[in-house]
Image (cartoon, rainbow, N blue to C red; front, top):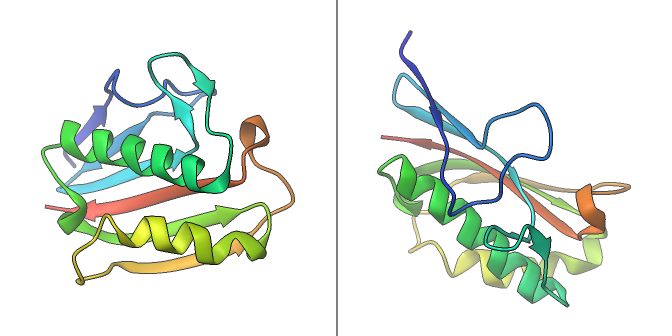
Length: 126
């Protein structure tokens, strides 16, 4: 098996014992991203739209580091602090794709790291 850890300063550093992303046999597994600004290490978004925009920037940075883009994404998982946020998150999320949407599930959870409202993970294939 060919396995390579993907790490970029353009996405937040891990806040635990995990990698930002792992590329294994042409498949990229991106750890869940929250709205941490990688330049400061802080959550600066003040609303759900801002959180989702930052999360998508972080995911894009990891895809780019693996020489991929959103067109390579085959599966996403969205975690929300409350399902009432779904329409806002969905609208921002959709802006990153051009119609060939990946498979996805969206779930509400009791809590997310750093007290954020949105976390998204992805799987992409070259």
